[in-house]
Length: 230
Image (tube, rainbow, N blue to C red; front, side, top):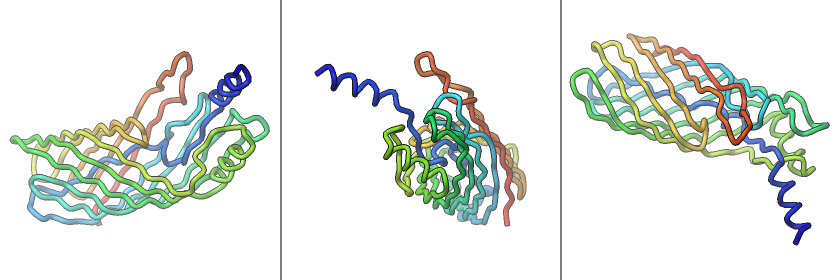
């Protein structure tokens, strides 16, 4: 009984590592001008410091997004994919400590339904992503899991779901300011602010450090991005 309890305690103290993209933020949803059935293509990039999975580590990544945006007077839909590359620094696995690269491709779907009152839209949306990830970081997760040095997600394919409230202010027909607060299986907490005017988009994501007991996790996470209609 005592041996089992001790083993459980040790196992519970092992670090955890997941797909690198899980530490990034949920992208903000893009909208077209207010005309029923409006469609356009969008390309965008963002980069920053994602959430790390253990205290004192870092997770840096950059993403490129290619989307078809469809808007009407009560909903927005973004359909497309992300290509991404990142680097994770692991410091809790002894001889396996190091910096590991990863890369991936991720189909995405985001949809929001909203109501409008004068210049303000408010609604609820959902974002779904399937990520196919490879690289040295995936090999590291598999090696340290087999060696009993960590308890990891060792799959090359991951699925993520997030829900978010959204508030958008439209001062005119060509510009908007959107706040989105996503909660889900990646991020896992993703506040973002996006400014959109004519063909251009700019967005910012930031979340401070968070505490679990007496432990500070990561250095906080942030990302900045911009995009353009094609």
